[in-house]
Image 1 (cartoon, rainbow, N blue to C red):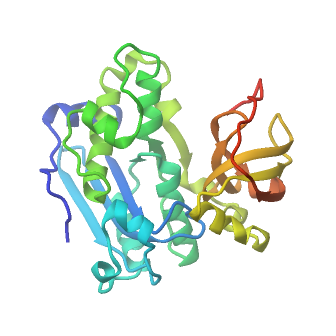
Image 2: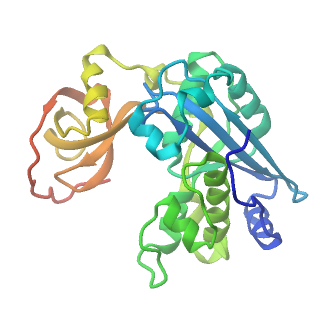
Amino acid sequence: MSRSSTALTLSDAEKAVLLNVFPNGIVAVDLETTGLSPLVDKIIEIAAIKLMPNGEVTQYHQLINPLIDIPEFTIQFHGLTNEMVAQAPTIKKPLKTLWDFAERLPMVAHNSTFDLGYLVKGSHDFQVDFPPLDIYDSCRMARARYKGKPEAPANFKLSTLAEYAQFPLQHHVAIEDTMACLKITAFALTDFEKIPNLLERSFVFRLSSFANLGAFQFPKKFEDLKIHIRNKKLISIDYRGGNNKGIRPVRPIGLMPLPQGSVLFGECLATHMHKSFLLTKIKDYDTLDACVYPRLDGEKS
């Protein structure tokens, strides 16, 4: 079943740009989920679009029954209800189908650490093998291409970049977001040879790097973080990593796996930067009242 209302096509020019950089082809992927934490939330929709060397474009789309209720606060974004996914398959077979569809081609997603976090976590949980794909991020790619330039878009959100690339997007419909990601990638890669290290700056990780089982572990001491994230509650963490060790004020966004281990992703209110905090380096945490924090000079992202 497709929820798309837009013609999902790549122009010959877009295909040429993509195949110039990825001559063996490329796959774009997007998900809709029950929340923003790959370590605890579930996939409810998968979409992927594949461009092959001969210019053929194929699609994969599947609704997923998450076996839990879809929270009301997420339904307002993606429009997927419990009734719509009740007869859909559970995640294991669709994951196998997705990885078969992707083959061993490079994969791109917008803010790909989130989407791929769900896919590798689900694959780990259900013992589904995934290929050693190279993962790229269309958000990072657009930033590397346009940030600081006179022609830069207002921001690097998917919807803003889709409008910048003149794609009429119905946002939070997975198959449309997937095509938007692919078109944004083509837009950013135009004349990519003129942008130093553009591909390297948009590379995220290789899936084979998820050999560390700690990437999927979620210690019980962090159970309350699920509630704080869902309620958009500010927290303070006693952090033993980074340049500025000690108490850090954080606006938590999600809990996700990375090759180096499970992390809390959020906005550090002292640096106004989005960061990944390794759970193994968080000694303790507590809720926090809203207030303003001075910037910590010298902080690295």
